[in-house]
Image (tube, rainbow, N blue to C red; front, side, top):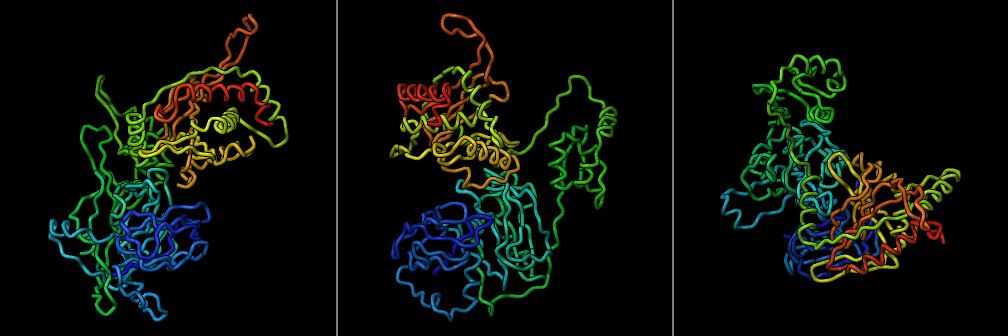
Length: 554
């Protein structure tokens, strides 16, 4: 059966998109995961992949044309299939409804596709029909590297009315926590993942439909699992929506599930504590033991205001009353976040697949200190040493493009543009927003962009597009007093620069020991793409810019 592919919503503010280029032509065979087209949004040009298999039967928006989100983008089906009914203006709303539970939106609001025949035989579970107007909402793919997501917060409860465009939940991905909006209107009938639970992309997230519809059998037979923290059930075919005349009607209404958190809180015996996910997260961040907090919510449930109102004196008195024997073993555990899982996976892959080597240098920072002080004396101007390093690296990379290269299994890509990733520490780990075309930007422009990125990174407000496309990376721990360190390459890049603190120390100049200021830097290189001499020449050029920063303005 032919599937309608609509213009996806590729960012939270996207209202329309432009087809920059088609990577498939009418008549081409399409596999799941193939890149169909490049879509230009209000933020970036992004690759749009297919979640369907078949033949590309129709292209609805030509290259260079712009259309609203949900406009007909393409049709995929069986070769030679008649799609005139989908193209003519007399197509019934039923036809749209039939495909709405399977179309792709934002590469994220894509609902589950049919599992293979082998899987169906293995699970021996029959496919269900969806009642009229009911839509299954699955875990969206909110970034190009996202494999699973965690529900940070639900902004709607079971029984709430949902309008198209309403924010359903906040989803934690491997890169950020993002708002996920509904593309359907109706009543929130079922929540498949509770706050704090994780699941693979395409797992059951929620069910929306007419109030009073019984969806218990749909929820029961849908695969909910995907990670250790999420409940696991049998895997079945994704249910398809039937036509109006075939849709059964039911009146039972699903009640909102209550969230129960179990914690021992280092007591000698375990106890059940009712606490909201947000309150639990706040308590973890503040180091508050939940068994010391008196809940003011329903049935004594601990809520946000209880954590906010929990005073130090209360904590102190409670701690004083608690007896901890000398030598008692004690530890805390928490589940790994999506960001931490992906950081571990990618750094491990980089460290054990790319042959790293390291080049260490020490720069004289006297001229840089004087240059920065003079530059910052200008009205409304404030630059940091890190901004100067970014600019200097960008200019040096233009002279040494091999260091600005990337390794792929079948090729080496030498980039003519310079996009510098700047590592920013956040609570859950590390994110790397990208300063695009850094060599073309002024020092104040770089400084303003980096400060904005750092602020939004810590608030988890960066978009995936702002963290993609780096060709070189800088990690600076100088503000923490670290004099020198090494970093792991951010693949597929070929190099990463580790920047230490400026240290006041005796130095030898013109045969005399005098007071000076130096800074140590370490360049980690991938030996598959950057030879030792090439890395050393890059550092020599970088030294010229840093030790004589006025040359960056020429």
